[in-house]
Picture 1 (cartoon, rainbow, N blue to C red):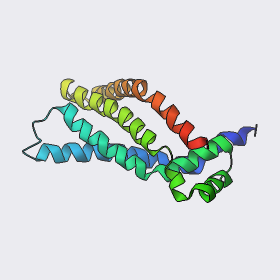
Picture 2: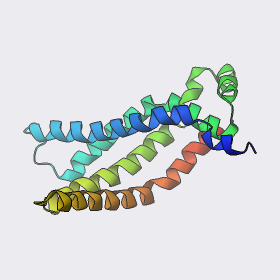
Picture 3: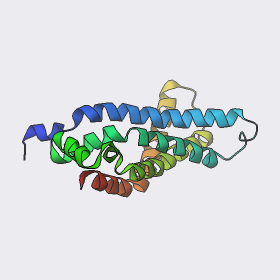
Picture 4: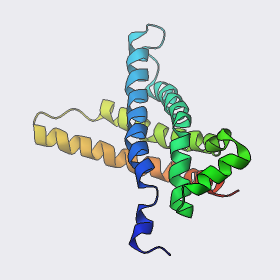
Length: 167
């Protein structure tokens, strides 16, 4: 089924999407929390409420990235960029946004638990005095956040891939 090269189908869009997605996730969390912490009306809201707003911003940004995601996923599934072109000939450019609601939902369902866990634990687990201990603290925060997030979001990501790769 294509030998070793099959593992590299869609690698270029993936190399674009990965960093852009992480940028959007991190920028949404940092930007929304910073904005909400500076406004008097939202400063004292619980971290969970602030994280809902940040996760919504991240989900909306992910819709912006859908054309890259669709090209990547279609190439991974079919191995051909021409499959994307053929789909666009039939359905027009909006076909690149198939699965956008599932992607936004998966982003929210993955982003919220990850950043809520991270933000919550960041408030509860004291910062450490030494660089090595602080590195360990941050690694623990990231590990716990990833475990919670993946448990919540993986089933939705399966739906997104199905909608993108089937006619």
